[in-house]
Image (tube, rainbow, N blue to C red; front, top):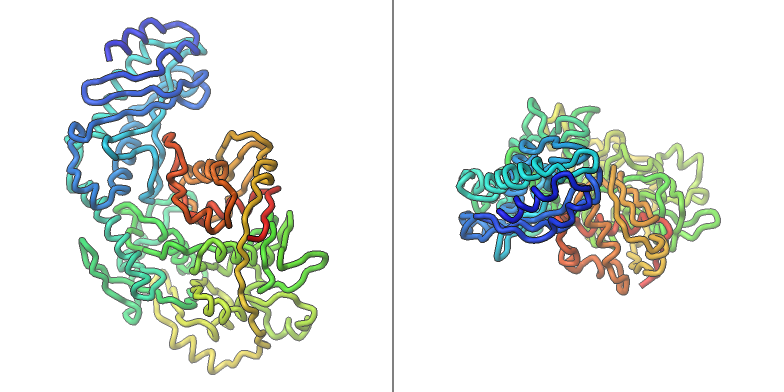
Length: 542
């Protein structure tokens, strides 16, 4: 600590690059500070640092680590972020004076910014102070020897925390994981606890809406689960085809979106702590203009002008071809639970009514819509949860129907079946084709060619740039944090591309990443989505 103070005094007034002399290890009373990489100038990305603390000195009740380690680390990351945000202030040019750790979302996720093994390690970033490009040594002393120790002590030492608050955070995640495991045992695909708050503040704010109507399960669909820390009642959605219906602005898409994000655990107070979805759920939509390479969409689309649908490739997919590709790619990656919203789907892939069937006969229409493919999905063990605002024909194939009426859920299954019997469909039902999943592997040379030998990764606005390749994931809806995009970009560089994509992605992807304080663990389905949207890449059959 004394050595760092003296060094900063000597650097005062020198050119910014002299800060490079700080790289190294510094002992403080309760922790060791490592300055790993110093930024090139005050306007560049902040300097990378980390601290190590002996677990005994940190003083946390270590039995909580056995309960849910990821949630414990997530709690510390949140506390560090909150305190660092309050303590950071402008101390000169550019990023001078900033103390930053990964910004957490409402989800409890594994991040490499806080890791607890033999020691507690926190990885974060600081903006070393300067005016112009001259080192401001006095401000650097205040930052590194006063403010930073304050942030570290207040966030990473147990004496400044409430045991009850940590325990609550950890136990919520423990119970959520328990429920997720129970889903398959009970032939369920999702669970929505009573009194959950599903609506969000806005499209860009993920916090719960303050005056929202709490969710209550219809009595006929209510189940009770005995978790390690509590008993919970709520709506269980069974395997099969479930429709969510209701009028506009009554909560249909809100329920589906909550189910989609139920693949992740959520922090206490989020409102969706116990909205739990099977881990293999993938939200499917149409994506006009997306890149597709060597995907078999034949079960849905038998032929296209000048294109094979058994190994379909395009630089500019239509709504129907993109949605069909999204389904087949999700199945290839291992998903057996598809989430579909009519509003973001290709109309012709969802259904053709009788009038259109009469006007355009089957021999002129290559598409077999999803409604007629339900038996094929069921043979494959695939379940669906679908928002259907105007597709009453789906009553004939649905196993369950949930009605949303002013955000209150009702079991409308019996009524929907009565309507289906009373108003017989006059659609010509098409014979479903067998869904055969085509397994592919990416050609490594095409990946490297798309990147153009440059390995620098940039992430912004839902897009990943690796070298010259830009991957647009803005319409891949189950990405929770920017750190997942950074991890996906790094994994694209790390994968060997020797095996089928499904096998490559079934390994422990997290262990392939070297900790830098910037990564959040992604699901394999989003890694697959990124590779499938990477323009210039080619896939070959396994």
